[in-house]
Image 1 (cartoon, rainbow, N blue to C red):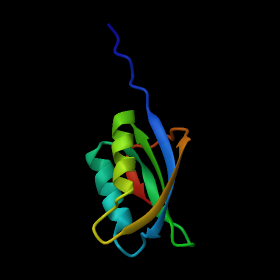
Image 2: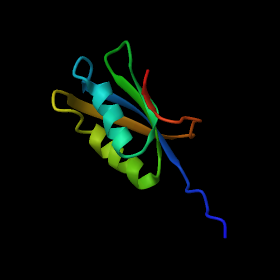
Image 3: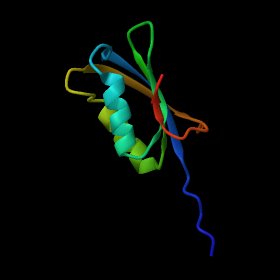
Length: 95
C-alpha cells in the first residue's frame, strides 16, 4: 500500500510595523522550524519583512497567526498574505 504524499500549502506575505532590528527574522525562522515548515524570510529596504512559508495547511495557518503577533520586541501593524506556489526548499532560511 502506497502512502499519499501530503498536499503542501504555500503562502507569501509582507509584514509592516516595527519588524526590523527586533530579531523578527530570527524568531520567524525559529517558529517555522518548530512547526516543521520550509521557506524564507528577508528584510526589505522599505522597512517591511517579506516571507514565503510552506508545509501542511494547519501548520502554515498556525505560522501565519504567529506572524500577526511576532516576537516580543516587534510591533506588527499589518500582515498581507496571498497563496503561493510551493518552492523546492529543504529548510526555512533567513535571506
